[in-house]
Length: 206
Image 1 (spheres, rainbow, N blue to C red):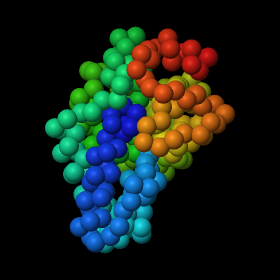
Image 2: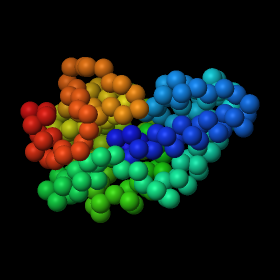
Image 3: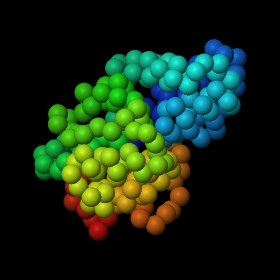
Image 4: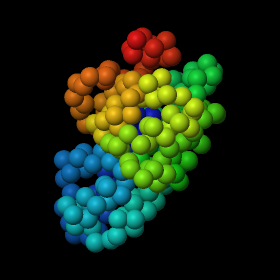
């Protein structure tokens, strides 16, 4: 979701920096980029250990969610081609799942703004025992859709997300955004979803 469908990574980075400043810590651009795609509790632990935020991890997560949700309700920054691809999948009756390490209350804000019926299931970070890069989130999404992971195409923007999808057995397309992606067996990297429809997706993973 973050960085693939919607460009919310700047929202997270802004909220992280503000929280660290409140606690008198230090948080660089490299620090922020190092936790892109992380499970939120794992990211909160880094904010505690490296950023000096003296709150419990769950408190950190809730604080960040409040800030990012407030921003997304004012403006949904769709990534190029993302909303159009979702709409085409809906029109073609292709079952889709949203697999995000953001928590449900934030995912709901994005789902509400997506084309109607975009997702048959939503798997969030607070609904799994092991977040990305573990394969559990994608395995759960495939099970919810009633298909094998090998029959799925995962679209990801972060190394953490790519690792999760590949470990689950999904055919994976990487669309780098905030952080670079390294070539990997089973991964197809493209610059953007702009102009990418169902036929193009099928061709990319054929």
